Length: 446
Ligand SMILES: [Zn+2]
Ligand SMILES: [Zn+2]
Image 1 (cartoon, helix red, strand yellow):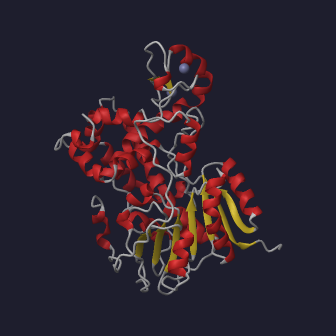
Image 2 (tube, protein in one colour; image 1 turned 180 degrees about the vertical axis):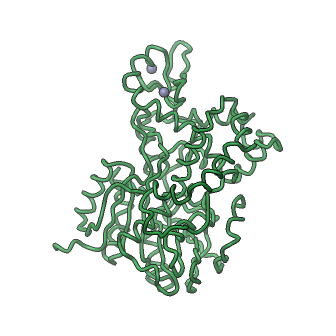
Image 3 (tube, helix red, strand yellow; image 1 turned 45 degrees about the horizontal axis):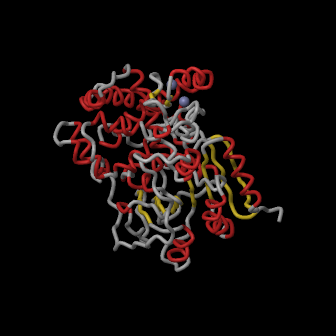
């Protein structure tokens, strides 16, 4: 997964030891397909949220597989026919992607349920909701007007995300020139990156890749300011996880000065988030703790991408090194096979981004062994959710499980990229890791 491995130059390569692949012990829910809309839109929407894929863009990435991005780039640069991955032209590809969750936002009619040769047409402003006729559109406008504008940003970000994937938009890097404790939210982070970042973003806005992207889409290119803002949102989306882990380390006052390095586990990591991961993606976490003596980030989940399947070495890390690795397994199995056997050290922090256990009994059942294990071993744990509602529901569950809640609230490093909620496209979009909960062990009251 080459595009941005060059960013690693300044960093020592993590030691690579023989690969340990633990076969998945549980079949994950069937991936959603682009071409066959399921009649049960609500169920689909739910499943997509449960699988950490709230955004259409993520679904798209999953659908196309990583190997297609290289091809995509070739196509955009004019080198390869698009037919090699099933689309006649880039325009068709984007159209197909936008059509994923296509049903009338007013009467809920699906494409195959339409009468009289009607076709679903999208709202011209936001391109993210569909109507079977003008009457449906008119009657839905009072509801849709509240979200149309922000959904329009979703459509721009969806296109712009390709630049991140193809490597034409590279995240800023380099140690923080300010004391890390001054960086408590995105405003401070953007000030810190300052003029250098602005110049880098302007260069991307004016790049050939940007021109080709919009030309290939056959759609008017938004104003430079709109593109600039979109790049910023994408940046917060990409950096939200490492900085949220940093928030966890800070809030729980964990010692990053531990000799040999500290270990962080990301539980239930999805295919997309691990497949798209690049060696430099957690650099920002390192800059947050310039004094760290090594950060080992291990992604554990049945959907972890094979690119990450390299065993985490128990060899002490060198100061300042960040090592990323993955295990394809359910967390409690991973624990039994790697932690209990003493192969790997106990984690210093465990994070689950959008575990979604509040959403259904099935998911709760899947997460229960992990939650109990983390509670009983008193492992500092951080989870994130998409909304206040989810925060409340998740808190209730954790309290019922008798965990000791240390902190919760709005995440200052939440993604600023809006994500459309499939089950109801007319809802306010959600933001990844908008809220967090941290717990440690059992409630002291018992
Ligand atoms: Zn309709
Ligand atoms: Zn609209």
